[in-house]
Image (tube, rainbow over all chains, first blue to last red):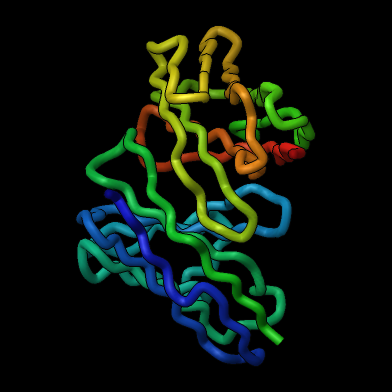
Length: 116
Length: 111
């Protein structure tokens, strides 16, 4: 149980392109989803917390106009990297939490984004 | 200040040996969680230990928590090559709004 599917797993695109990443909870309803960014051999950096039906809460230093998050249903959150540039290249991982706080998060398999 | 620092950063052992990873944190927590990440993949939840617990077991995993020292350890017994991965601790603060991950320990188990 508690499976999270993230798509696509890998994307290469030209600078200036917008890229959408989907995160789906397959067998549970996720009121809260999280988006992380991870650089090689580093830890996860929380970008934003996404609550169903409300605006995402962004971490300090994360541009909300650059990284658009939509959590339109209890099973789907999307992250759109707008006008992507090479410095946006990274590994993006989503997670979803069952129920309220103090519960484990269940992670997708990540999206490797490479901007040329 | 960083919540969740781990040591060692990298650990290389032989199959069959035990692996111990440590995590220190700075603020009060509700619980502490350990996750595993295989290269290029997402994280897998391993075990959660609450602030009022001192030790927890799950299969070959043993986690301890010392809230007075603000530290936790993860012990993997009888390691296997398939245990090769990065291991992260994550702290859940009382507000419960987010997890803060440590820097991780890269474990290599040599066959």
